[in-house]
Amino acid sequence: MDSESLPDNVIPQDIMLQINEPEDNLQTKKHSKSLIYNHFTLNEINNKYNCNYCNKSYKVAEDGSTSTLWKHFKGKHNELYLEVNQITKALNKLEISQSLAFT
Ligand SMILES: [Zn+2]
Image (cartoon, rainbow, N blue to C red; front, side, top):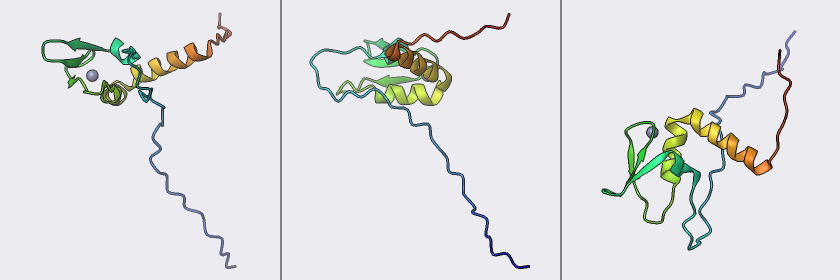
């Protein structure tokens, strides 16, 4: 019996979680406060953002982009990032789901 059924070897690829980061495409004059600033502290002396959770600091981007900060936050403090992301989503939806609690 020669079965020619070749198994489809699907090579698992690294699936990166693609989470939409807030974009600063709108060039508004207003200085919109990003959620990321809750997790970084601006050091006005050397114009750097210090991470609240580790010793990393990043220079303030000239265009005010926070992507570098988000990248660090997502990469190094992923649990916190996901938490923030969930909160953001929850706030956007304004959905309160009541879960049954085990008693
Ligand atoms: Zn950090």
